[in-house]
Length: 341
Image 1 (cartoon, helix red, strand yellow):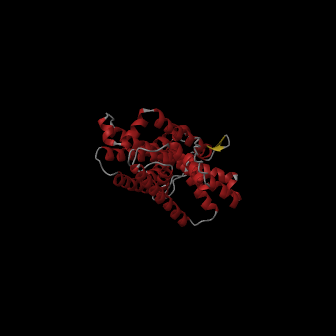
Image 2 (cartoon, rainbow, N blue to C red):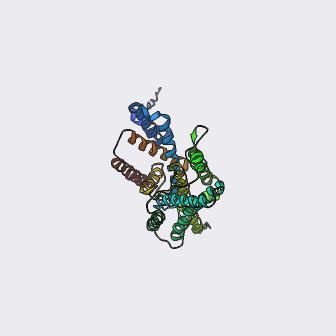
Image 3 (cartoon, rainbow, N blue to C red):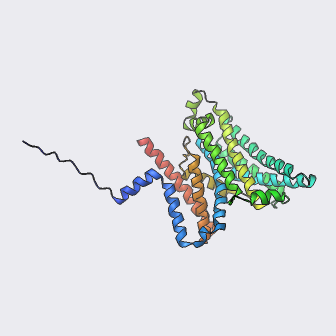
């Protein structure tokens, strides 16, 4: 007797299932980015104007650098509330140093710029050391430590300037670097790309990168395995603050003055948001700098779009807050799903 075996036909893929498969493969962030660009191309012709694109690239560069530092701290299981204040302190100290040195050494422009930049970077090293030592050796909560250094850095910046912008930096530093176009692109873009590449190399090719992931994944296990966790924790916080200082240097060169209000809480919130929407886990151990740079681009385009659409600045803060809360909620839901699986 012949028996015909009937094979079940594959269930045809629905549009929703196809969209879910594409989102899982490509990632939600690139899809949202493309949709937002297409939307702005339709509703606002100025979006693709050359000046506007340069503004987007500059703001993306600033945010990508500071978010890369925030990512490193998040990976080791902490976070840094002081990055915006570090930007402001770097700006005021560097501008003040350059102004004083320019008056004392009017013919030594290169030395003035180098010493001023080193003074600004020293602010990042100083704040980063305080954060790292308190977290790694004293076991103080990163929230309380970085909240305290936020207040310290803000206060020092205001004391140095009395809230008044500091001028007197060499013109070559502002015109030939901060506002310059190198091969048709803002100079800050090249600096940001170089720093992102360095952080990527650290994450993927060095012992430091492996140790950072190990510490964030399981601090006790990493310590038992012989990882000098305290030293690398301190180094991670220093790296975060130094990247914030570099952001302050770039922003100061762009504006042409040192300001104690530069950066502020908005840059801090945006750095956390750019990292979290890029998949960096608030519980540590997970994060990729190339995705963080994409998250910074997304937030910069979103902010630029709201400006072009004349959305009130207060409402923009509301939107940023919603994005942060939504990103944290999605991170928590993803964590619970992984635990169940």
